[in-house]
Length: 275
Image (cartoon, rainbow, N blue to C red; front, side, top):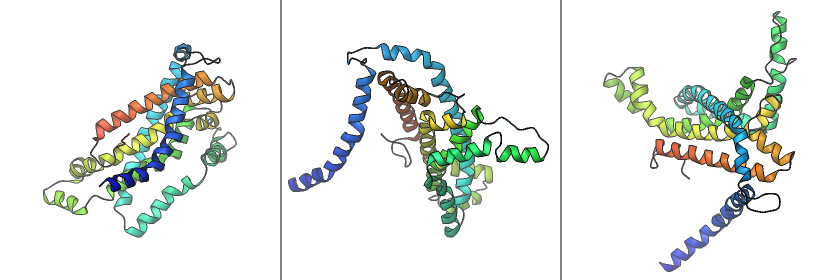
């Protein structure tokens, strides 16, 4: 028994070391910079400066909530449709969903810039119809569109994974009991797919609220989200302390969101985001 426990500890050691180096240590560094000034002295001034970014925090939260909601509306019926298809069709559709993820986020975002810019594909088509060009780059809609496109697979995949495990016999049983399509959706499909929905919401909301590259390019420099503020403080102003303080508050916000997700999904349900 002792030898078995020793082997188990040895087997866990690499993972513990990995977590310590790449998770715990960086978090401690962020906390250190957040509560110190440029000379290394303890201060709360960095946290006090966060008040001026209250509107930016709220805007980031609002955009991420909209993007997450629209992504869910698109992903849920698509995932259900995909889960009801045959094995070959499922594999093909899954490949098409994952294909954009094989390209770098920068390339995908630049592609949307070419589509949405004043001389882009959409405005060129509108020009052929005699319609004046639309201003799309530099708007909140373009930023939200970029979030939806880039993070859509993260919503589809967990919902599809859960839905593919729903036994078709359950739906047939519901029909035998007199359930129509709406009743089957409300009483069978929605409850059983809830864990995948919760995981998908978390996987889309977290990167959306912290993104900065999408808002920089598709926002045309006019949309400032909290990720942009952090990037500017570190890369341009070289104010690591304020950047760390903002990152700390954003991290706390994300952890609170994950706690709400866990409480809603239930810790023993498959698909919950446990931390």
